[in-house]
Length: 219
Ligand SMILES: O=C(O)c1ccccc1NCC(=O)[C@H](O)[C@H](O)COP(=O)(O)O
Image (cartoon, rainbow, N blue to C red; front, side):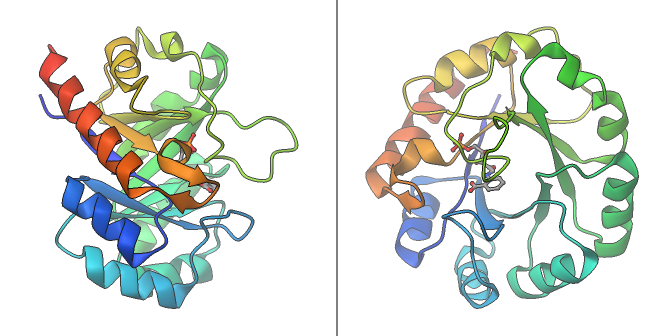
C-alpha cells in the first residue's frame, strides 16, 4: 500500500525542486499572511508552473473568502484546496461547487471530542487531514511543529482518504503511520532549518523515511 507524502509550505524554486526530485506526491503552498511560508500570487504562479504534472499542487487557506480563492485558483491552478480554518460543512460544500477543485478539510485534533464533526465533513470533503490543534493565542492554526496524540485516531473508520500531520519528522513518521494507519503524511516544520526555511536534505530524509515506512505497512 503506498503512503502519500506531502511537503507543505514550500516557497522557493530550489526547495520545491528538491521536494519534487525526492518524489513528494503533494507539494503545499500556504496563502495565510501571518505565516512565514506565505506566498504572494506571483510566486505562486511561478511555483505552480514548476510543479505542474510532477506532484499534486495543494493550496492551503484559512477561512478564505471567494475572491481570495478565485485569485489562488487562477494563479496556482491547484489540484487540491486544503481548508485549514473553521470552514463549516456547508462552506466546504459551497467551495467545492464554486471552484470545482477537490477539497481536503483539516480537522484540528487535541482530544477525541474533536472528531465529533468528522462524519459531516467526510460526507463533503474529498480528503481529511488531521493536524494538531494550535494552542490558544497561536499566530496560525497549523505549521507549528506540534504533535497530537495519534491514539485518538486508532479506532478510526473513515470512508474517505485521510492524512496525518503535526510535528512529523523522519524520526517519528513510522510510529505515526503505525498508530493512525493514515494513507498519507504531511510535514512542514520537520523539514525546516528555521521557520519557513525548508532544508533540501531534511526533505530528502523525510521522504526516504516515508518510503521505508511504506515497506512496513500491512493493510
Ligand atoms: O504552515 C503554515 O505556516 C500554516 C499556516 C496556517 C495554516 C496552516 C499551516 N500549515 C498547515 C500544514 O499543512 C502543515 O503542513 C501542518 O500544519 C503540519 O505542520 P508542522 O507541524 O509544522 O509539520
